[in-house]
Structure formats: structure tokens, C-alpha cells
Image 1 (cartoon, rainbow, N blue to C red):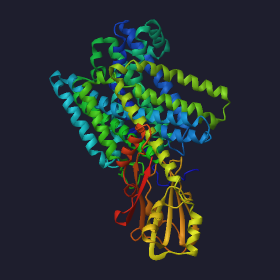
Image 2: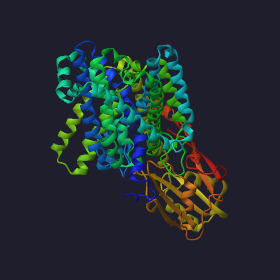
Image 3: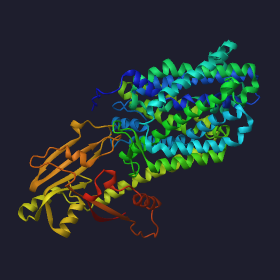
Image 4: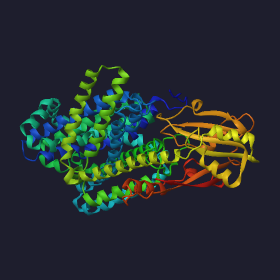
Length: 629
């Protein structure tokens, strides 16, 4: 099912500028701390030149192999009707495997685990990025050190407070600011390289490999520091649906990658001549007169980087809700033109609390670096397994052996970095892992509970067609108007309809039985969204397909339907919904499954169907339903 591209989309230049502002904020601010942490991890195990050139060599080849080859050249080919990200990849992988195949459960677990770990990364990225930028004040003058943490907290609170405004109002500013950022960091790096051109020796991979081989005791900590340079690589794929594959690739290959390399090699050139600059090599590249403006520019860039990750968490949550892995939450659309620009108040609050706790707990970017990386590597491993193990071999019709070789090559790199970052668990890496485990548990419990509820409801369902036929022989009282009944299945009688007839014994003149199907597509074309069927006694069956990047607007969808004998008006129609009350069935052993208690708790805090489907509350009639699980 292919989507038709709108003729109003911005041109390639506009898309490239937008991609620069949103996609590359995270990886673009990594020079603030990545090289510094990689060299510090080596301690005094080698000469200064060997440490600097070795770290640079590893960062250079990591950017080429992981970001350029793996993501830009390979994984970005695995788009789901133009959309990217691990949830889109999971949906694509499930299409390639039969629904009852043994691989389905492992695929879902891998996808959910990768998504859960993404939230851990989403908390650390704003904390470490903004904190590392504000720490530039210490380089300008040590007297400002006491204000670093309070100022960081203030910036972060402001960032989350204004999330409800959406990226639409400030999005046009992101590209120009990041354009200036990359030009400045590239220029400062180039000037340092011109002073020490011998730093370019680090292009030779032998420097990095020799360093790791000669000093195995620090190999893993060093790789953990090197990985900080590629932590934003997943964003290239996750944001592909917003800008398209071509603009993201062009911006990376032509502009972002060269500017990053210039800055990294510039820091290396500075450290070859002045090892003491390791305290903060990024800001030491800048002349003293320019350090305060650089702090301001870095703060702006890190806020943008944080915005991109936070927006990604909103999108991932929305997709997970549509696919049935999370309960319904309030979704606010912040742009009338771009459906992907959304705000989730509950997710925003939880992210803000987590980010502020991280800053208060670790208090410096150096300490936060010890917690950063392991969640990202976990997501990257999940992406490799889904992309190279299932999706790309199927798309390219690769034989099994070459496909497994390709998967093994990239897994070796991913698992090496995962092993390196696993050393950080006791130093702070436990935090994103704990958050990921919590979110993974919630998603699996919700999926399990929905299946239990579905089975319990199915046990009491009545076939629709025979039920309607009896009204031809014994019709109930008919009243004017249109009644809409939401149903889980199109071939059974909605519980709200049964309850209404049982208590009132009336049927509206026009009855619509509406079912929504969440399909594994990002967005459903309007021409294929609605299936309308006429049933006996003035009843219509309306089947609506919704993509996992869409938020259904039931009244608008029904107003677009073409009914043969009436027109639907959302202001006049009545919407009958079932409000289910879940209770735990008493068991002989005297204790309930802990999953059941958690699922019931989540259900009671779930957003109501009327609000989620954008149904006017004054038009809603709720009928009670009790379900024993």
C-alpha cells in the first residue's frame, strides 16, 4: 500500500534544512564530550600521542561504519511507506513473517525491548547535552562553577514547560541555528588542524586497533567512550518519515559528517600540543573572547538536540499505543499541517522528572557519560536484528548465507560496543536499563492483558447478522436520529447496543456499528480507509483502518462517509460506548496474577475512548460492562 505524496511538500533545500535542525542535533552535540571521555578512559596506559590518535581513529571509523554504512547506506532502505524507526521496522518485520510463525514472539520482544531502551536514551540525552554545554561557563571562568547545575535545571524545566507549544512554532529556527553550530565547530577544528596537520595520521585504522590490542585492560572503557560519538545515529532512521531518505543522506554525507570530523580532529590536534586541554578540549578550541558566545550557541544546540529526542519519545509512544502495546494517553496535535507533531502531557511529565533526577544525581557531564550509551547500544542491536535478520534480506531476496554473514558483520560491531558499555552498569548505566525494563514490562503486561480481555469479551459475544434478522420479525421501537456504536469486532453485536436494547428497547432510525482496525502501516490512504456495508433494518457496518502514526478522529471520519439515505452530522449523532469495569476473578490458590493487578491499574488510568477518538462528550452515552479476568 503506497502513499501518495502531497504536492505541497517543501523542496529538497527546505527538507535538508529541516533535517539538519531536527535529525542531527543529538549526534551534532557529541563533540562536547565524546573525545574527552574516550581519552580519559585510557588513563595513562600509553603516550599522549598514542591515546589521542587512537581515540580519534576509533571515532573516525565508528562514524563511517555505524552511521554512514549501517544506517545511511543500509538500514534507511528499510522504510515502511517512507517511515522509519524501530516501531516501523517491527511492523515491517511482522509483515515478512507469518502471523503464527514461531519467530513472531521473538520479533515482538526485540522490537519492544529496543523501543523501551529508547526511552532511557531519551532521558539521558537532554541531561548530558544541556549539562555539558552549560559546563562551558567553567572554562570561561571557574567562579561560575556553582551555577552550572542550577542553570542546567532551569534550562531543562523551560524546555519541558514549553513542549505543549509544539515544534511547529520554533521548527523553522532549528535548521539555521544548527547550520551556524556545525559551521562554527568545523571552522574551529580546521584552524587547529592547520597548526598540527600530523593529526590526520589518525585516519589510519591501525592507530585505533593497535591501541586496543596493546592495552586490553582499557579497551572496553575506551570503546564505551568512543560510542558516545555515534549515539545520535538512530535518529537518522527514526526521523526518516519527516524528511525523506534523500535529504537526510545528502546532509550527512556533504555537510554534517565533514564538520564533525573537522571538530574531532581539531580537538585531537589541540591535545597533541597541549595535553592539559583534556579538561574540556571542545571549549579550549575556542579563543577566550569567544567562549561565552560559544556556551550560548552550545546551549541552543543542545536544547534543539533534546527537543528532537523528546519529540521522538512522543512519536514512539503514539505508535506503541496504536499498535496496542501501551494504554491510551492524551495526545495533543500541535500543528494543523503536520500530523506527526504531537504532544503527550503524561510522557512529557515523566521525561522531565527523569531528566531532572539524572542531573541532580550525577551533577556533571563526565559522571553522566558513565550512564550514557548502554541503552542506545541495546536499541542499535535490536535494529540490526530486525533489519539485517528479517527485513532487508527479504526486500533484496538475499539467500540465507549472505544474509547471515551481513547480519554477523554488523552484530560484531554492535555487540562489541554493547559489551563495552555494559561496564558502565554499576557506574550509572543501571538507570536507563531500569527505565527500559520498567517500560518493557508495562508494554508486555498491557499486550497480555488486552489479549485476556479480548478472550473474556469474545466468550459472551453474539453474532451480529442473526441478531439483526430477529428485528425484522419483532422490531423494537424506532426513534429519530443516528446512533454510533463502537465495536471491537465487525461481526458481533456491540455490548453497548445490547445494553441499550435491554434497558430501553429502542433502536435509532439509523444505526452505525463502527470498528477500528490498527493496521501495520504508518498512514492509511483516504481512498482505502473506510469500508461501508449495509445490513438489515437500517444498520450500517463501518470499518475504519488506522495507521500506527495516526490519531483517529471518529466524527470527521464519519462525516466523510457517503451513506445512501442520510448524511452524518457529528453534532447531532449519539455515540454509545461501553465503559468496562475489570475485576480479578477469585482463584482457588487465593492470589491473583501480578500482571492482572497491574493491567487493571493501567486500565483505570487509561484515557477515555471518547476523548481519545475526539468524540464530543455531550454526544456520548456510556453503558456499563463488567469483565472478570
